[in-house]
Length: 388
Length: 155
Image (cartoon, rainbow over all chains, first blue to last red; front, side):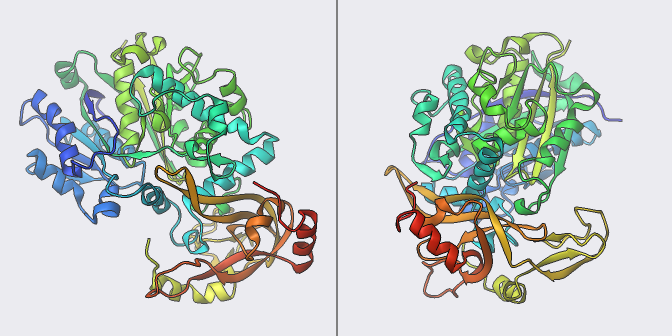
């Protein structure tokens, strides 16, 4: 039987291209303040997600570097690698560690340091997320596969390329209203349609831009979390699952089976009805759409129309990515899953400021985050609950 | 990412034979070898098998990469999702030098799997990578060229 586990403390760095700071610098700056807020001997496990370290810096075992720089070399350190979902994988492992009684409090740190590379090279980082044994030798890229999925989606559901623009427009509107964004303003769907085509029907805005960023969370057993934080948030369910990694091999490429399985496991009998809000990976517009449809928020082929009508925006019955997700806030390679959990802690702890979702302030409110790895080869779902 | 010479050597037989994996129990074809068949659940029944040589284009794109600050997209390659005759499916590049102009016209067109050079621009020290591409038949290609005015549809 798992012990109750809660999210207690959070910190995050604003996504930017910061050439002055290394990955270790980012880890110190994001996790340092959390380490100062708790007694030195309280953190008894460290979980690190830093998949870009090996790809950008050639640094394996970045977890050891982070532990050293944070002064936590004496505690067990585990590095999780699940591509761009590494942050969510690290969170799940930390919750399991605390829930099993192997640690009272665990620090989870996700670092994305990518700005040492050009935009083109940063985009190529995502190519590491496709099946390198089968898909890469065929000359395929992450962008190419997303473009194919988007084209298949439009053809099957008889939609127009411009319909996809409502995903970016929704995420951008939420981000700009929320105050944590790289965007100077929220582009309308019409503006998004005019962006340059990268993998038609997808345009550049459909691919979340990669930034330097870092997120840290303190996960603790529930009684301890209540001592450490005024408004801790309970972990009410975890679910993780995989799918066929070769997109063309999937029985239906437009159904993200991993997302469906993970969300179902995390929510259990409760289901997804009545959620205060939903966090979904938005590394690419088509992946957000397929995830939303695969877990049953909307019927297949209807998500773009629902988005156009306002679904997902702040103030709608179900806000999707209240902080703007990766498209609105900026994409931390391997950090976005932990950023979703941070948003849950802020929202359900009623500390999200001007992007606060009203329903999340209610006692017992629940929210779900769904983090995809690559094109849905893995999915990590987490159900959060505000204490009653 | 740099080219993996050993992986190319390892896959040479499958490439030239245009092979995938067939489940010995349900006969379904897959691109990847799996211990457990994703269709019927049979264990350790995957065996090498030739992929169907022909199929139909179900989806297409022309994917490139954005260049910082220039609002440009470079390195564009036409890519297609092909429903192979017999049930399997493959995503791959579209062959032919004029595939860029024909790319938007190939939806629902018949194609065949052909062994072609994958990357045109490679480092002089690296071997030339070959892989499977979707190729139009001469007749189809000529008809598409004629229907698109020889230039193909604009994107």
